Image (cartoon, rainbow, N blue to C red; front, side):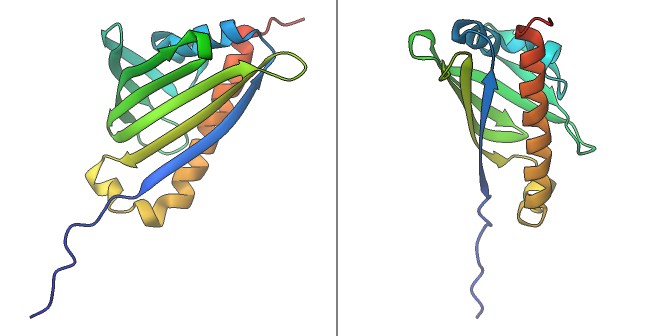
Length: 157
């Protein structure tokens, strides 16, 4: 009798990106802490609906023709050490974090790390095949977020 392979394990994606922003670390931290304002400066985060001060749902759409509904709940807010972390649920399951530090020579370095699994059933079944597309989509979103944060915090001369 053949043995069933059992349920397929979802693939875990880890993304890392470093943003360099020519603004003071406290200003960068404040902007990254204000989840409700993300749609103002990060075009792919289309809206954030707050449930409480520390939780809500973000609607996200980047280059792919599909919007994600991602539950966001604050897990770490440590301004003294420049650390932010949110838990993610819904269409993406896992966490995302920023480590905000002064940059060498001025400005700020904001190191982003995200570890997620796709929570959408049909998409999670294709995650291995679509991995290059998902990674490219994420890269587009992260570049746009960095540009948006710079526009928000750096006055035009």
